[in-house]
Image 1 (cartoon, helix red, strand yellow):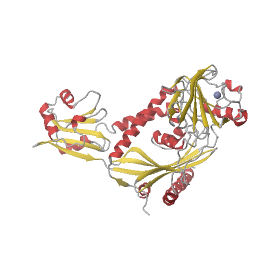
Image 2 (cartoon, protein in one colour):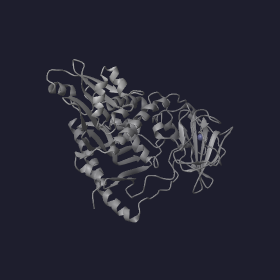
Image 3 (tube, helix red, strand yellow):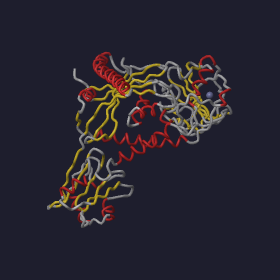
Image 4 (cartoon, protein in one colour):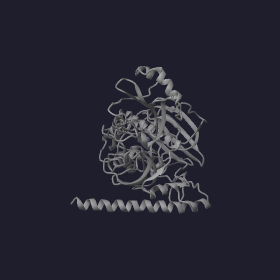
Amino acid sequence: MKPISGLTAIQSDRTKVKIRSQRIRTIAVVLAGIVCVYGINLYTTGVGDVFGSDTTDGLPNPDVFSAEDAISSYLDLVDTSEDSIFSEVEPILAARLEEQSFPNASSGPFHAPTLGGAIAEQEGASQLQVVNITIESGDNLSTLFKTHDISGSVLLDIRRNDHATRPLNKIIVGEKLEIHKSEAGELEKFVYVPNLLERFEYTRSDVGFTTNRIEAEIEYKPVYKYVTINDGESPITAGLRTGIRNSETILNLTKKLEYSIDFWFDIRPNDTYKILYNEMYLDGSYAEDADILAAEFKTTRGTHRILRYEVDGKFLGYYSPDGYTLKRQFLRAPLNYTRVSSDFKPKRLHPVHKVWRPHNGVDYAAPTGTPVRATADGTVKVASFNKANGNYVFLTHTGNYETRYLHFNRIAKGISKGVAVEQGQIIGYVGSTGYSTGPHLHYEFLIAGKHQNPRTVNLPEARELGPEEIETFRANIADLEARFDLAHKNWIEQSTVVAQTSE
Ligand SMILES: [Zn+2]
């Protein structure tokens, strides 16, 4: 049996991996994700004080969802204060964005500590002036060279010697350039940085400009963290406090677990999670978090372990230790956790909560306009408006399931009776239409016409691995799990040592 490559990366502490274009894409996606998260603080404003005292046209069935349960859940969710998780996360992300877009402004991404110093050595006494440029919309090389007083013949010469994988005349927004000029104002060196992994240097010589492609050396280092969520913290703030560098890694983890855990309701103080993941280093400097290898999330509702399954370098998915895929017919919550604007504050008591009537669903307090997702593939049974429900959508799903979504500010485009929807598709936007006193989503879950508690109803698991594959899986996973558990043991021992020395 061959070891899986994920494990190899853990075994040797400084595994070197060749550049693949796939990695470049990963970075682009990760960066896009960060920008996306960075934008979320838009949602933190306008969270009204909310209480979902609605009625529905469904059958009343108070026993499946007790008032106490509803109130205790609800208290956890509502927080309209300013100090949401994102006000804390935001500056970190902002700092990271800057750092990532250009790790070292004066030297370019790969040359530590300073390229300027290196050039001064090479060129003798003459100092080069370096101008860093980020490509903006509408830029092209001709205009940029003109702006920086570089003659057209120099550009022609550079183009003649252009051996970049994507030619210089195809530069795109966000890419980096460096212009290195002599004191006399001559272009001595021109650098094109299409991504974090490679750079193309065009250096003046006797025979014109010569081209040099320089690859960053990539390493992956496994990192283990054991995170305890304190009172008032979200999984994100707790993770960042414990030393996870990128909030995207934590969001990624919640995404993988969103079939099992309702991150809007299920998180309590003293919940914990363990995570083993790779950090990516370029030329010895931390660049980005890479794949999650194993993780375990423990809430009062249960413990969920996920493992990255890879055979011969081919990624096959994340599975539970007994070989179940994490994907299910239904998402646990109809709102994406990454959109959560209010943090966990169990002690906060909303005055309106003194009154509560048992009702048929779960209320997710969220700012007006928060997108709401179909929790499963299905068909629109009705998309309409009435006095009680406001704008509402009912979906039917295979297996005699039905889900209901009430009080939309508006129903998403194209959602009308008979239309097929996919799991995760946006079907409407949170509002306060109908019998509702503040923006929230009222969500119901029915099996064979009978209301169930959406948060606790058993959702069928799916096994993807065949009987033969499950054996391969178990053998590989046993190794990964052993490493995961050993990492935890080391963590506990280390924190014991730290506790002792600090006494
Ligand atoms: Zn409700």
